[in-house]
Length: 338
Image 1: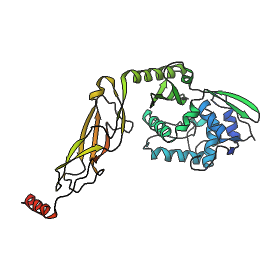
Image 2: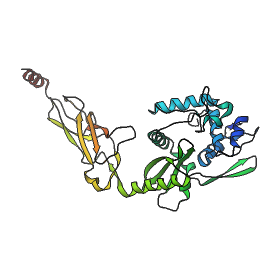
Image 3: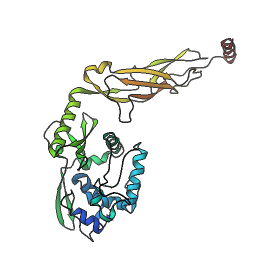
Image 4: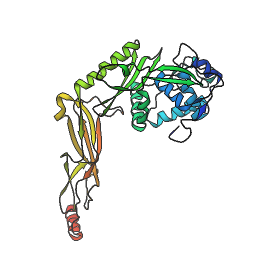
């Protein structure tokens, strides 16, 4: 892709006859493409994210991998690298295979359709925004003008919450619709500087997907608070140390943590347990050395998208502990053995 230098925003791509046909199929969301015309990656990218343009998505896949088949293989590999092992991926754009003509993935049934769990979509959305936050500069656009050799097509964003006058301040991410999945929506918003992602699937119609997403976001706003725990806070427990000039060392968390916790139990939400890295930790110990893990359980927590029910973060020595004289150490080791 762009970040790997495989293509640039100005790389031009020409659609195949099949992709031109798909782009002009009135059953599908698209910007119309013309045979023999070429389009920049930037144009296609904007059309894909703003207008859910199916054919534009396929062209981007061709630009990256050469063919749809190779691009689908790349998508499958990427999904596995994210820990998504049960997804079924047959197309770049989510269309049922019957719409793809001669660009259908080999040996695929005409009714085959991409299948992801809600958890899968949450993982992908989180990864996308964390690694490529600039995507939000495009997903927040309410419309774009698609210029095809001077012929302008205005493309409205399929995300209707962008134009909602509520307090939600949604700036992405993507709608999706199919007979099997219903009306779906991955939304995201920046709440007081903190990113929220919701995934909704199976809504009965277009209005329902946005109404239900608003309900989800309002529920979060009304019932959860953002809790930041920094490394310099007094969130420290002691670890026993053998053969040191002190018998224990204070352990601090290794990195700042940020969590959403239920409002009514915010102050008591964190249950923290220190798990030493071994049954015996011996001096000398350097400041900042890993001495174990903090396991953090959140009261009222619904779990995390990786399936875990608690967080783990490294526990680091808050200060250095010098070892005792070698002869005294030998004597202690001898008495321990008796």
